[in-house]
Each structure stands twice: as C-alpha cells, then as structure tokens.
Length: 312
Image 1 (tube, rainbow, N blue to C red):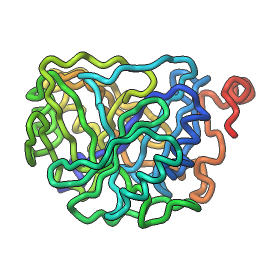
Image 2 (spheres, helix red, strand yellow):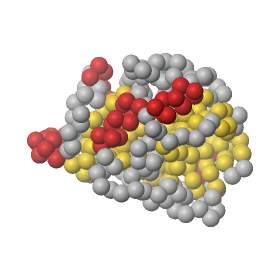
Image 3 (cartoon, rainbow, N blue to C red):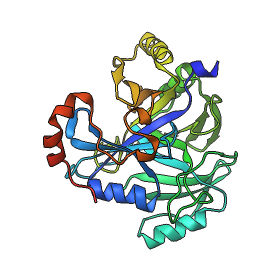
C-alpha cells in the first residue's frame, strides 16, 4: 500500500542570513505564501520560516533558519545542492523577465533529462531552479497580484544531492525508501518514487573529487521525506536502525513529527509526517500571519518577540 511508504519530499530546510531579506525574496519575488512564522526549536531567538502553497501541502514547503551574521556557507558534497521547483509550461520567459527586474542572478534555460530548466540563486546564494516537467503537474500554486496560476511555482519537482560517491546513498533511497533509478546523464543519477505524482524525484550528483560543503547562509540544512503518519514513520525507524544507521527518537515539531538521520554520504535526512498539519494552531486564511511559538517557549513570548527582528 502506498500509504505505508515514503511519499516523496515533505519539505527542505535551508539557512539564510538576514530574516527580512529572506522574507522579501520568497514572498515578493517568488510569490510563495508564508505558511508559518515560528522559531527554531533549539534557538528560540531565531525565526523558522515556512514557505509553500495555500495550505502548506507536503512537497511544496521550503523552510529557513535565518541567522543574522552567520556568514556565507559553501555548497559542496555531503549536502543537497539544488532545489528545483515545478512551473507551468511557457512560464520561463516570465521568470527571466522577473529575475532581471529584481536583480536575481540566473542562467539561460538548459535541459536535463529532456526537461527545460532555469537556474538561479536567492539573496544568500542558495541554488534553485525552475523546471517545466515532462509529466503534467496539476498542483495549484499560490497566487499574488503579479504571479498567477499560469506562472506560479507549484511545489518541488526534485532536489539534487552532491556526493563523492553515490552508491551508499542510492542504497538508502532504493533499499529503504523504495525509490528506483529512473535514468542517468553523465554523473547525474535520477531516482524516483512511484507513490506520488509530484515532488517524487531525487537526483544524485557524483563528484569523486568534490569538496565537502560547509553549512551556513545559502546552503541546505536537511531534506525531509514524507510519510502519512507516525505508525509508518516508526516502522521506517526500525528499518533504518536494522541497517546500522543512527536515528533520533520521534520529535514533535508541532506541525509534523520528525525523525533525523545522516545517510552515509553525509546528507541529513528527515522523515516527517503529514499530521497534524499547519492549521492546528491557525485557521487557513490566517496561516503565517501570527508568530507561533512551541509550547515550551510561550511563557517567554515577550522576551522572544523583543529579540527577534521585526518583519516589515
């Protein structure tokens, strides 16, 4: 049963520098919805932003820890090195014009596995891409005054993991997560799960002489895979332990439950549940408009609000 398996990507979490700059880029330039404004569970003086579609559907959610003054990271092996969004056919010219207007660095459209894509970076240098998928994507993007359904990002198409050697990571994808090798172009290997139609692809880029990445601004922190609920999640925990890998206990993240483990290539993986979702503490119409705090920090709200940078 598909419900008992990994259901593609849940979310991806990255690191930013300035909170306002990050917020402006993703809500204004990219037109994503701020789905949740909360704080880092381990550092409540730091925001945790969630951007996605209207409801924060798994497979659309890009999250950030914006740490002021953290310094620039370095993209390299042992981390996710590109996040690729699905966009409608015919929309790449719109995005080129938009990126030019907002001074967003981008490269001319290229082709990968027969699909056309446009690479760009956010204000911290995080590597992103927009791609017109070969298979229809019927997800609804979040509309803004300037970005409508015919151009809006629909959610993740894929993410790329850069590795010095791909075999150990590939075995996690195939033997534990149920992915299969779909295709290969040079040193890029495409893996896909058949349990979902979208956010179903992981590309492994083999770089034998690659320099390990350094986590700071402009790099990805972890990649989260989706499961339906905690029962499925805990079965995966037992499987991962049986393979000799270390994995955390179940952690309550308020909007989903999480397990974390570092796969053999060095990338931090998470397994996250669909439940309870982002409307557990805010109605749908108000998602992302209030600062929501984990229960253990609610008594410290005044101090936390005073420490966090004010968003305009």
